[in-house]
Length: 496
Ligand SMILES: *[C@@H]1O[C@H](CO)[C@@H](O)[C@H](O)[C@H]1NC(C)=O
Ligand SMILES: *[C@@H]1O[C@H](CO)[C@@H](O)[C@H](O)[C@H]1NC(C)=O
Ligand SMILES: *[C@@H]1O[C@H](CO)[C@@H](O)[C@H](O)[C@H]1NC(C)=O
Ligand SMILES: *[C@@H]1O[C@H](CO)[C@@H](O)[C@H](O)[C@H]1NC(C)=O
Ligand SMILES: *[C@@H]1O[C@H](CO)[C@@H](O)[C@H](O)[C@H]1NC(C)=O
Ligand SMILES: *[C@@H]1O[C@H](CO)[C@@H](O)[C@H](O)[C@H]1NC(C)=O
Image 1 (cartoon, rainbow, N blue to C red):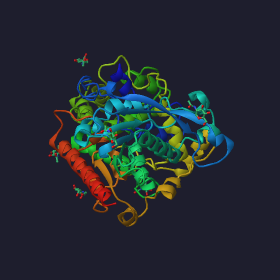
Image 2 (cartoon, protein in one colour):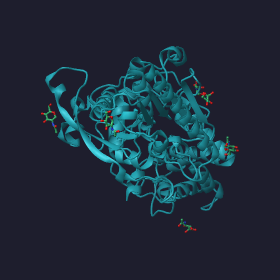
Image 3 (cartoon, helix red, strand yellow):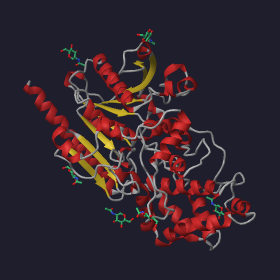
Image 4 (cartoon, rainbow, N blue to C red):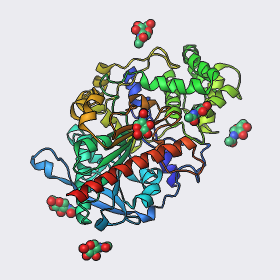
């Protein structure tokens, strides 16, 4: 049950798509540690790990709606959920550390079941463990109900990253006060969008967090810092490295889909060929679905399944016929398993789909396009289109430069080498989002820990017995670095 909920991540789209940009807004997998389920994954092995939810106690904090204004409605409160596990904690008297997971665009239960880094390492850190839910997700909903909170831009306006990290600051201070743990060092941990929040939290709240582990955080995928084709270049590279013939088949398939679709009765032939759940009304439904499948396979290309290899086995195997489209269908089946139908099954949009769309449209505008050298048809990012589309959805335009204005990003090495300390940026280079990650060491304590074969947020998921050696090493390096920060802090503490 838990497992099902965990992996029922819907990338699809609640709105009909009109422009290429609108399409992009919806086909790229969300920024999340947790990928969709690949049918070969073994439910009892891959993610639930050692997780024992019973050690966590749930609390609700009476959170302030608006931290940055002093208008009467700014003082409204909402219940914000957080969970604490004190089983391994050394206690306040010895200033034992506190590891805090900063929630992102999903209900916090989903993270609790998948993100194992805290529980796995609690014993060696003697640490208190805290998971905090992001506002507007799960049970941390302002204005009394989701329906009310998501109603329009005047209520959605409080749904942003600056408010979210201010929430985390307030809750961490509250916990430390309650436990009289003022000298316990806090390490914040996050993945993907949550990883960006963790790194930004360390920069904005150095008096609250001693350090941050930012896993797969593409903090440089804003403005024009990262080339817009970075994401799809890596998707393409992943497939090409897995199999040259698979890559070639995918590359030629788009025009074959278009060609067939343009024939009389072509859409119904395509629908039949791909066993679609509902008759296709446009070839783009199929193409968007495949686009998302390839992108997700690459983003979550993790052991033991390696979904890119699985898709390519299906395509190269040609079990449904030798022609290009039959091969592509083979890839679809390899990824999804034997289903009664594919492509356009009706699914209700998840909380994440709904919430993350607002976040992308307001401030998290990550300019992802497709360049000329990829297995996908070229599709450059068009900012004007993007803003127009978002404006039509919410009535307010995107602020594409706000993230770099507020958090920085340009000339990151120059700025952070003097200004910042104690941040780990971890990445797997097979993750398409690593193109917007920090991949070089900036200083002795602002470091990049990367693995050639890693995928999205792999290092913070529950450790498994059969994890490859490079992943085990990556985690060891991260733990060693965090221990160094803490020991240095303890040494400093005794000096005052
Ligand atoms: C939250 O704070 C508000 C205002 O300070 C107060 O009126 C309300 O009773 C509090 N709610 C809870 C559940 O403590
Ligand atoms: C912590 O220190 C205080 C004050 O010295 C003491 O009263 C308390 O018993 C200690 N708590 C633990 C768990 O050792
Ligand atoms: C899927 O169906 C094919 C053909 O009917 C069969 O050979 C294959 O074993 C099935 N796979 C699974 C996982 O059921
Ligand atoms: C891609 O190709 C088009 C058409 O050939 C050309 O106009 C465009 O400049 C190319 N873009 C890049 C990034 O090379
Ligand atoms: C950065 O420094 C860390 C710790 O010293 C090291 O483990 C890592 O390999 C370095 N990363 C790069 C990209 O050189
Ligand atoms: C990465 O994977 C490739 C095959 O997919 C393998 O040849 C290579 O040795 C791996 N690299 C590392 C560092 O494990």
